[in-house]
Image (cartoon, rainbow, N blue to C red):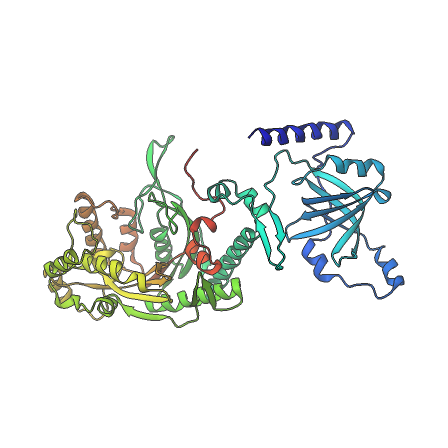
Length: 521
């Protein structure tokens, strides 16, 4: 710590020295004409001396952060890093003048400079900028952790990362981006993925909209919300857990195809695939069903994979995953039978419970379970770990969601009979996409029967009173919208962060969020 403090103190002294020279260490602007990667990629070696002299007349300007300085008497080599990468500056005392050259003695790694000159190739073969002037743009007062490289006798290059503390990297992402080259590439790919999703949706005539983040009634997902308070109105508000119910209101209002990228907030734990604040994209299509959504989901993910990586195949860890459509589609009960050989539909509720207890299959015994909820829990504990390649799990028990239509093959009479049979399970037109053992989204043929919708939400409220934490509250305004009349509709929620993880081979969600939530120090 003492050494660090000494370095900071020295930089402050350098800052005062620079000011005493009449130099502003923080000027207002600098004209940048070119960037490193473009300069290097577009450079053509002059064919003869005449062309070499003409090349000296083409003056460009660059700017970036100093990452290395090598002084050699009357000449100096400086490596700067800009938005595209790194480039070398060659600065001679005879070219820039003694006063400017002396300024180099007061510059450190981390300072930001601008320079003007012509492009050439050094004797070692490195495309560089031969400077006729340079300008200090920002004096850095805090030393950067420097990444050091060493070439072994075998020819292998070893990188010693001076900023390897994972938690510190997340807390100080600005430093992480400067010193760890691969980090920036992840976030560039993230933007490409989001842009691709938007293009795919808009090519299918989906219209981008915005809905409230602060909500007086939360809903659209089974999750625990963050609670806040509006002082002026003296009312409790919730950070949204989903935008689903507002997008459905827009469908009611006459928009046929809508989508929205949102930040959702769920008061839940943090692990490698969960962050309390995360990004989702949801889209809704009037007059469609969940088969339409499955097709759309495949298209969206396949296009995003190509946009990020140029191919439908990616490596995640040591596993190759192929996003090319069509994906496998399998009913939840069939997936259970594939893995466990259990025919859950021929079993009673008690038989399923006994099987789960006997085989130590985890489920919450504190709350009352329907047969449908038990089937869902059995699936989660026995099947999810085997779903590596893209797979749609279809036909979920109605108990898992109050917002979805029962299978279309049920008659009205059948549904009434099944409601009164404890060993009957009503299945709904719902799918969840799984990749790399993770649930990546959710989709329904949306329920638009206002009578059934109210009944199911009332059941959710009762389950909440019975001790279940993650249930839907009653939203009378949403019910009023459904009573006005919502056309046949299908909707999808896609977890953007998890998709980015998969497409960038990132092992934790914190690697794909610029500033993940961290415990306060």
